[in-house]
Length: 85
Image 1 (cartoon, rainbow, N blue to C red):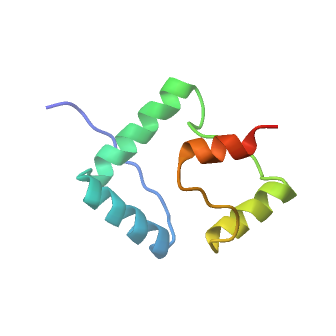
Image 2 (image 1 turned 90 degrees about the horizontal axis):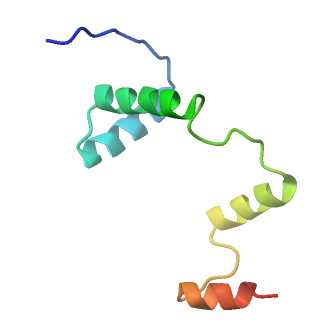
């Protein structure tokens, strides 16, 4: 059997519960998820996602989207046509 190491993390109960539900739905154990995350840190030589604070316009767009506000499209082609300048 391969040797293993143990890590400990402190999370808010809500975050832990929500993440564990998603992992369960995906059929991925918590240990496997940690292993994947650590492997991605190694592969990217850093955190495997962007760590930037969104600007004012992006924050507003995110807020609007979370409440269903904003343009909606029936197809991706319709969206790209609308974006053409």
